[in-house]
Image (cartoon, rainbow over all chains, first blue to last red; front, side, top):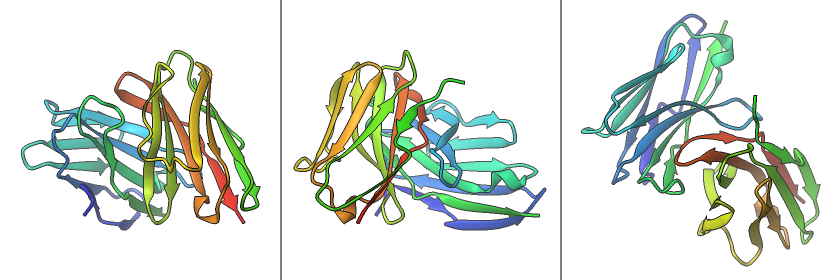
Length: 113
Length: 112
């Protein structure tokens, strides 16, 4: 069982709608959680990074939340655009050792006109 | 914008051949990662370096894979001999410290 579980696996929404992606983790100890956006054929691009003490962080229309007690994070996308169509990957780092990161399998978001 | 440069972007090779992938990290970044991405496994960490020293390569098949940083501007990942199961997209990422890594565009490797 993956220590970072993302849901849903895929999602289709209409342009202009909001959506929320979920990430549940069991990784411990916890250092930080990152959300990445990966366009088809490109490398992942960092959207947000949150440490234990942070419970929300925004990057434009992307807002990530973190509940370290329940080990849950969400990524909320507001007023979706066609360019938001991508895979969104949740990454949890175990400690300050950068290599100790566990990747979720990602949520594939498709935004339709 | 500063970027991580990976070459080649695409590589098709025959089984048994040596493959070398190169990465130029962002100037000033002291941490470099190599990842492999497949549809079945997602993103997997193969190796990473800090200040050019290998810190962890436990994710890498040692018998055929090797990763090096001959200098601060170049990281290499070699596969010898290559096998069809090595077909994947290989990403290099660099950062400074423990946050905010920047990924390259990847090398798509196909071994036939």
